[in-house]
Length: 404
Image 1 (cartoon, helix red, strand yellow):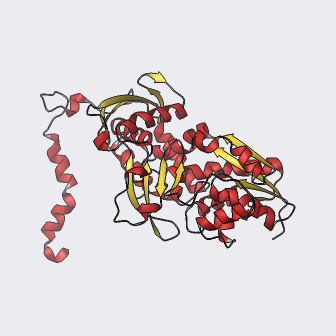
Image 2 (cartoon, rainbow, N blue to C red):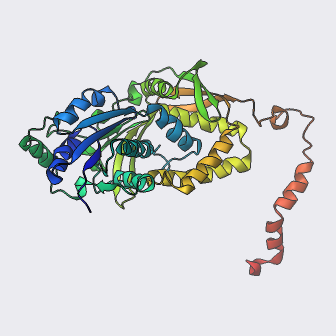
């Protein structure tokens, strides 16, 4: 490959990407290194001073782009409307953020005339696949540089020594316990004591949710108003999606909602353990499930349940920018046209449970469902239905055991 002249690096300001900036300049003398920071709600702690840090590391410039609204509207909502949950529990917080970050990085690369993009993902993780699959779909002409698959730095200590050698300032230390990834939707925790699957998560793992033992003894209920599958009001008050999620994170986190501890199957083949906190997201997912129970017919709901598993795999595996993902999203948006209404969710001791739902598109009829006296349902009709429904079993039984 030709030597790149301008490289756009996905930059966080953490230990890895701080080392990547001088490494790129060392490996490709004379190249321009431009840093891209996508704000997906990782918080002020990571973003304050990040531009200055990048430039002091050797970057020509650093661009911080606010992606929070687009992240929730264009990536989170279609995913949760599809009911996508990886391996039954993981709400895909990191997985959903990677495609919008890669998209923003490519857009900046086009803007500054770059001929290469770089990332700080390791060769063991899923994120390298997610970023590079997005690059392949959006900018196949750009060279991709993945330092973790190229350099001889193998540990946190190696990176710290490299930064000291190149006089690059860092706040990282040799005693960091966990590897974390945070955005508006969730925060993930890996490493440290979690690497032994027999260890219970230590108390210092969790950051945005209370332990159930410390949660309030009284439940709290919230009413979420949905329009076409997207949350638009909280307790009757209209809110932008990013504020909605931040507010629900605080409320649900107070009640210990949204913690999971999972040993998941990574795309690259190994198992890894992660602890995830998704308080607000857990409430939104529960609300959507409560709403679809009242507005979707049986066949549509059951299809949505089946496709949710496939959609989760696509998102987890970094296949966002694919025709299949787009096709499923189009179907989900069509289903979402009926998903308007309000859901009341109760938060209590680590759980978020739907306790009320209503919708102008409700398919529920108390006249038909009642256990009391009714004048709209003739129970005698059930006999013929059951005889036809069970006809295959009756025929098989009449044919005798040898027919099986």
